[in-house]
Length: 515
Ligand SMILES: Nc1ncnc2c1ncn2[C@@H]1O[C@H](COP(=O)(O)OP(=O)(O)O)[C@@H](O)[C@H]1O
Ligand SMILES: [Mg+2]
Image (cartoon, rainbow, N blue to C red; front, side, top):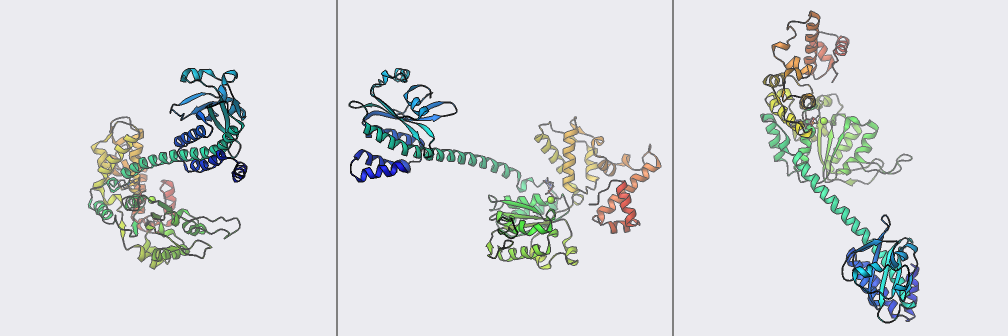
């Protein structure tokens, strides 16, 4: 900085002790990161160096066009219009002002004196200008002990102001960063409380033995980093269990990164998972992969059966050696990640067809959690239904609603091809639509009612045409067969004595989805 060089050359000449003191003060200022303490330090030292009765730092609030002083020598806080007074004039114009008698100057704002009962005589005000030239306030010294402020005082004040401005800027920045950090920490603690409440084994509902075994297993493995394979149809709670494993483990405060292998185009899977080095192809920037994002935490690989053969090889290597190679990279990158894989497909069949590597399969299946389809844990349906009803009533601020006994029976009988997710969605829909405090059968979705209901919703109940009854029976039988055959159309068609084309036609007619 130019002021620094001119300052040091003067000191080397040995001409000026006052300026040498300013320089040593600079080091103290730069070490002080606490804004109030820094303001106090500058004011104190400025008064001493210029033999003034007192000195004050005024900071400019541009938005409000106000000057404020956080610390005066006696600790009071002043805030006033920047268009008034000597300090204001100095900050607004950027000019040094040196007055032997302030009361003779029309810019002098006598109200401050009146209020503080202080009698101002001489004033020296210099702007606080940062390195970029921005004026952030005024350094003002009052009442020289003897006579008026000299040209040497002006020089000292200017040298001091230049250094003070930089130190103040830094301190202000540090203060803002600290405030932001505190804010983020508070927010983080708050979010953690939320997460801990939501994602734990307590939120895995079900008293059936099948669910309880899973809950106990999650508790048993909570302190280890063992990889896990979760199997089960869509909507059975695989992702929920994966999160419970992560958030109850020592890895909880690091990332849970989820990726759906089926949702990624084959050409992107590798770079997405393992990252890519810069310049692999034109215009490609280096990017870290999901594995590295999950470092220290958990990587949830959903629908692992859909992983490409090349990605399977790489994944196996990470599982065995805990190192990965980015696409186009040559140096191995160590990673500490727990893998939780999930599949709704029959991995064993994929294995037989050669679509999935046996070595990877055996490595993954060491700890397998099989999620039961909802139709296999029917005893949990009433509990789950009530849990979801309560949850959504609370979320939507509605009075609690209850299902009638007949509704509970229907829910427990229905086959729930979409498993717990379908049950959850149905309960959510009811909370949105039902105005009464009890849900009755008419409120239920048509599919649940006709399949799960008692005699009254049998296809042969009175009041419908033969065609309607036959259609309904046909639709139901096809739906059941599809579920039994896990949506394999060829098997379903065979089981029903239809051709595949015939089955597809009927599925279209009844709006039955192919998975
Ligand atoms: N036993 C259970 N207790 C509470 N909620 C459950 C249970 N099983 C599933 N759910 C809920 O059902 C929905 C679907 O679960 P999810 O984990 O996404 O299934 P999947 O990954 O197997 O498709 C989620 O909202 C989940 O919280
Ligand atoms: Mg899922």
